[in-house]
Structures are given as C-alpha cells and as structure tokens.
Length: 444
Image (cartoon, rainbow, N blue to C red; front, side, top):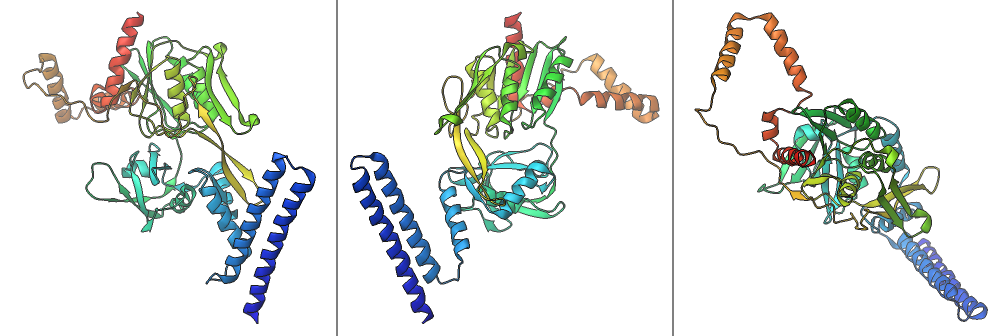
C-alpha cells in the first residue's frame, strides 16, 4: 500500500503540473493573443512544471531515500555549476566557509585555482606559502587531492577539501608539462598570511615593485614605495607574475598611479545596472618614468586588468608569458540567512574594448622562464677581485668579529637589492632590466 500511495501522489503531482500548463495556455489565449510576454510566461510555467515532475518522480522511485530538501540542493548545485566555472550554489556549510575566508584566518595551502579546459588548474601559488615552498607552479593540473579525483569537481569543492586545520598534512597529485608521469606533492597546511607588496632596487636608478595579490592596501603601499625612491628612480619594473588577482578597486587604483586619463576597465553585464566604466584621473598620477610589467600564466583577474590597461594606453611594455584569462565578475547573493549563490554577472573589458575572458593578455615581448645561460672565462679574474677574495679568506682564518658584523650588515642590505647573480637566475627579469634601461636612454 505504501508504494501505491507514492505512485498516486506522483500522478497527482503530474496532473497538477498539466493543469498549470493548460491554465497558462488558456490565459494566454483569452488575455493577449499577440503578446510576446504571455508566450514567454507560458513557456516558463511549462519548464517549471517539468522540473516539479522530475523532482517528484526522483523522490519516489530513486533507489536511495533522498529528501526533497536534498534533491533541491543537488538541483541548484547542478544548475549553478553548469552556468560557468565560477558560479555555484553555496550550502549552509559552504557559505560559512566563505565568510571565514573573508573575515578571519584559516588553514590552507596558499594557492589560487581555476578551471582551464575542464581541468582543475593552479592559477598561482602565493609567494611564501606552504604550496609555494612545496614547489607547486602556475599551470600545474591537480589530478587528485588526498586520493580523491578532481574530475568533475567544482572549484569550491576543491578549495573546501584543501582548506583545513593548520599543521595537518595533505597530498596533491599534479600533472606538469614536461614531466613523464604525475607528481605527488606533500604539503602541510599553514596560516596564510600574505605580504602583498615589496620593493627592491636594481642598480642605482631602477625600482622593482612586486605585487603578489590585490588586497585592500596595494595602492597605498605601492604609492609609498614609489614616493620613497622618487628622487633616484628613472624606471620601474612592476612584477605581477603568479598574482591571482583580488580587489577590483585596487587594480584600478594601481593603473591610475601611472595613467593620466582615459578608461582603465569597464564591466558589462546583462542588466544595465551592472555596467560600469572606471576612468583614470590626472590628479592620482604620481610618476611618468618608463615602466615594464612582468606577467605569466599565473597572472589572473586584477593582474590582467592592470597589465592589459597599461598595454592599451601604451604606458608600459608587457614582458613574459600569456596571462591566465579570467575576465568575469562574480557576486555572492544570499537566498536565505544561511545559504547563497555565487553568480557571474558581468565580464571585464579593457580600454580598447577587448575581453580578457579565456584569452588573457598577450605580452609585447614573450620570454619563457629560466636562467640566463652564461659561460665563465677562467682568465677574466682581475687583480682587485683576487685581492678581495684573499682578504675574505684571511678573515675566515683570523675570525675578525668586526668584519663579521660588517658582513652581516652587508647581507641585510642585500635584501633590498637585486644582485647580478639573482638577475641571471631569472631570464624574464633580466630581459625586463635590459628593456627598461633602453627606455631610460630613449627618454633621456
């Protein structure tokens, strides 16, 4: 009898749905024979009736006992995940985790991930985090997380698994270009704290500015760094490699430091209220020295807005590799007090009108990562170099504490500069220095 009762209820649901359809059609005929809106409404009701019927049938006949609430959650998750790679339904648990990520500290690996060609891909490891120290690289495809396959896994599901208690280990299996087989990488979760901006000098007149992510203080910190070295700076290298993005207003503000006027970026959505254009103001510009911007496959979102806008304005030379290609806008919209949806509402467009989405920013000068290949000349040592070397060897023998203190201070000072040795280990940076030197000479 129990089964018969369910079958009866099922037919009843179907009957109600059919009644709704006929009512809608009758309403369409009697009120507006030519109205397009009425046809759309009838089609809408038909689709809702179909959805109701499927939910009812699955609830009754599915081999496992699934509640209507669980079915609705699954339906919402399926619908949102099929819109695009960045939209999804946030259950109570997911929404709570999102708030923790936004408002407080959490244990994690320190990587930003995205979906590229259907695969869960590392956009960029954040500098100095457990993932970075373990050797994860931009472009690595995550095959498994703790033996769990990532096939058909959403970004939020992956992030949820990778985040956890500080000190707990996790194993990520990756596929890397150039490697014959998948690589297992063990990482210990840590508190993710990020130094978003730091600066160094190259030679006497080049300022190197590294931005690792776009948090709320990026514009302020970059401005302070530039103003501090303004008297001696003749050129700036802005390094956005492996920067996964962040706050839009900070990306706009950073471009505004270098560009006098014109559009920086625009966002266009389905609704007119979602459309917006961000413009540069001359009063915000703090320098007009030559500029080079470093990017790679780990540069995404806000990084692409900065590099693309500077490229369109011909304000800087872009060097490195093609960027990731994330040019969409997501908002979190609560649907109850405990649940929400994350929905893509617009796409970004650069000043020239081109899109970033799935295309990225192509550098003006393409340079693959690696070291500068040099050959040492055994007979190139000078007398002064030899004398200095021998003096250092004498210090080792004599154990002169004063000289040790001097060396310690010298090492500390080196943290603020990029040495020739460091430069030759990074061919992209070396190329940037060569270009900025040429631009300085041309500018005079």
